[in-house]
Length: 246
Image (cartoon, rainbow, N blue to C red; front, side, top):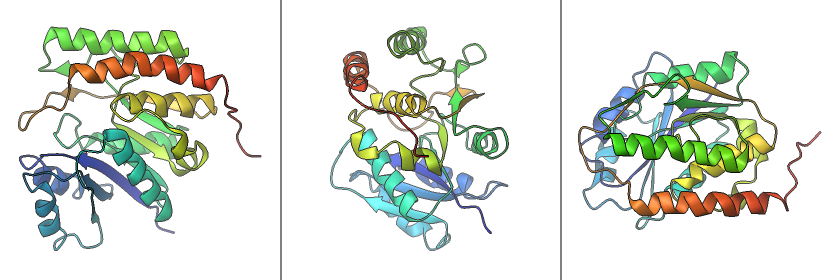
């Protein structure tokens, strides 16, 4: 039986990166399918994918959405699509090469062979492995993870990481419709919910490299959402049961 593996990449104005990224993911020694979820990019990112689908008709997929609807809703759309298509391992990553596609193989291996239900590509599990970020952004990201650990009591070092591999059973269990945070704090809520259900989380060290092409989507509002959203998330957790089906 063939094991089905999927990589989900949300995009908005990634025309400089998306063809190179798609070709790299689809040429890995461990084969993955690729789903692009494009939020109406005016730079015609989606058209690049449509042209590539002629080369990769059985590996490359596209969902187009109208306008910027948020990172979290993009991933939830992708997760539901993946579950419907019976994928066993579902990965997520950025389009801008800040995540090295070769590391997808390490994340998959952690889930397939090392007991992880969720494998996280971690910038902070073995020091601070970030290249080309200004010191202020490194400190903000690092201390944001400390803050999240204090509020949630999770032991995850890189709580805001967006480079991950899930086993299917995690996404089936956590009820995606109950995930409330929509921006980058979505990444925190997904890890927290996975942890609350008792799944095994393993951090895999990676090197994160700031994008070389295109424009970053980070903003101050993203960190404000994380600060207040984490408190609300923790409060909501007191009124929810986290029990695996027997």
